[in-house]
Length: 214
Length: 220
Image (cartoon, rainbow over all chains, first blue to last red):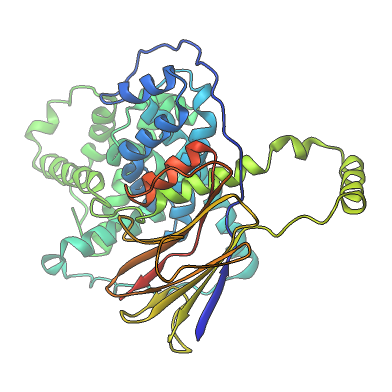
């Protein structure tokens, strides 16, 4: 017999109660969120989270994957986003769509994990991991597969500062408007627009260097 | 290659992000037209990045399990002053009877080679499970494959044994897939499983049951 592991498991908890939600401004509801809001209106936080996980689980995961440097961190940020969403659902005031609110949580979790990860790397000076894929040749543009193009783009996104990266991903990968993003980031929409506009040429140059020019 | 005219990068991109109409120049300048097309492709590439990536199969069950853990550790405990906490700990240590065993789950891969990865196995190997139920009136040990197929329920399965507060069972890992053991505990009868790992874990959480997840095992 080999390979024995003991797994510590999550302990018990009692049944939870949900207070009736305060009325909220339903001004910015993304299509499909009615179901979640209806669950919240009847105080069913469990059903609301289940629907949020169903509707946004994959999108939040893809965002986290691009935001943080490795799969374990992405899993952690992804799961914590929904744990915190559950805990914050009763305080959701409807000032943004649920989707935007959820990505706001994800953004914070990813930035926090990035900070911790960087601090750890500095302290222990970890050896850089070898890339899974060989780097594409500088002049191999015509031979690049879709996968290696995506890999090049991921690499270039990770060269951006985290706050720039999150703005680019929220804007283009998730389609969040600058007005919504402004609420999340606590910065003016014009500042975010300029940040994204400045980031695009940086990404283009990076992709050109990797032989994956758009 | 740097184009002769870089106005699209310095002005056009910002106009686009602001939602403003583009200057006339950008319709006639060849460099700018080319740059505009390149940035349109770049935006499309970013929009599609990670399009094939899916979260791990059991991620929803893990969220429920984490929520269960947080429920058990109320935040107010952290507000206690350190001295109060020390006094409480001393009181608990000396005045209260020993607490019963905590629930736990042990997973053993039988017939696995000594160098086998901790989370990997091959078809034909067996997964032996031992669960400490800590005297919970209702306890069930389950194994799911790929988050959907409920392969084992203990009590219920022929291999299932109960010794005191411990449940044990053995499962043949017959085919490739991701196997996930779950221990569910409650005072009340458990909600019937069968809808899949995530919904079953969610239903148990909603009832107030303990949901304890083992580490998933990839069989290849």
